[in-house]
Image (cartoon, rainbow, N blue to C red; front, side, top):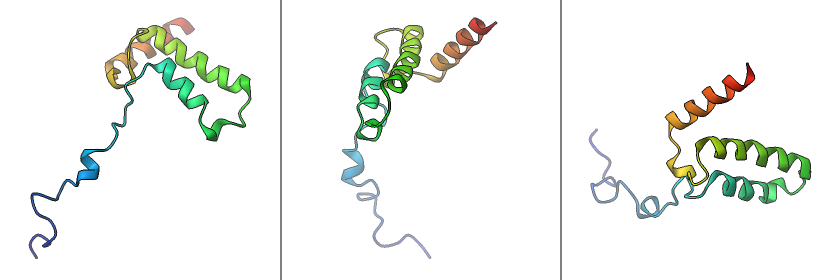
Length: 90
């Protein structure tokens, strides 16, 4: 069989892939919540629904640090947040 003729070392990673926007935005969680709540897909959501999203994200932002960006959030950060939130329930 071998390697298909179109696959060479030069074109395996196409230029659109190299220019792709990172999946994790470089913004705070609060800023992300604002962008999310202003999406066209959420235009019919009530102000109360949008406020609930903002409040939940704001709590997470307070735990992780006000300057923490989405891109810099680690698994350990989220595990720490869950541990703190669970401790508040008891």
